Length: 341
Image (cartoon, rainbow, N blue to C red; front, top):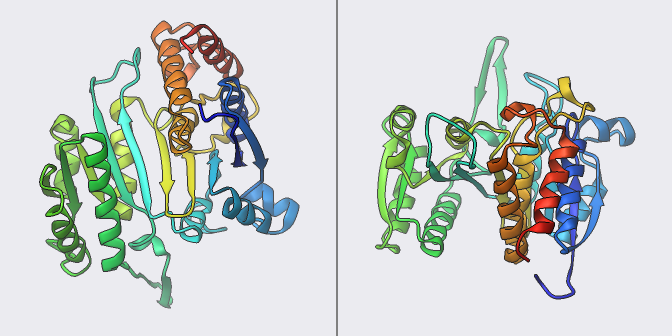
């Protein structure tokens, strides 16, 4: 534990089940003994009702100051309405690296036991820049933007992560057989960066073939490096290997800020019923603890989470249990208190 240090963290509970899972995770984090000063802010539809803006200026200011945020799910309208809060925050704070570890939890039976993948997704370019227009009625276009700077940056991030954490292999996933200029630029930059990391094996697979390869044999992969849209799709596909989006963490990392978030939806159908599973946000909070150099606390929370999943007595209904959100959080806290300090 960082001695006598208080971490000020921007807190975005989100909507739907967001406030419930966020409250559960905050209770668990506070129980670790690490000192937090939470700065809660609304975003999305709730913020618009109160402030007539989807992302209040005070929220931006808080992240600029704290440089770290914990975020619950926020509903994004489909086919209209306001822009994605997630994408907007990533662009605003240049959170260019999306980090998604995919690893099985004990006690959760899946068709793919023993998966251990790391997905690195470029977070600020590609089609997600949102440069769309209707040229004439009935004809719409979107620009895919790829830069040498952005491609080099995300490739170096991936290889430096591999070196630091002992990962052995990176595959760059692309569609350069068709998009020869945009995805071709990504490949050229990644190949050049790979030369600086000879201890990390490097390979390339086309994205559609990768999807088939993953569901056939995910164990052939160690780390996947993808541009924005492919990374969004493939990371969700890989979440199914370990039980779904309700169990996997997400981190958005940049030079000056980091946002840790649950990657699942806001599930308005069960909002307010104390039924939601906070595991995804809790695993994201574990990544946040490591980012804050609170590795001991991160290890304790991870051990408590795995203990609760192994015992299976207080799991939420989405993973075969019958417990509530709050009871699940209570069980994690109890495991923290009885586990090794």
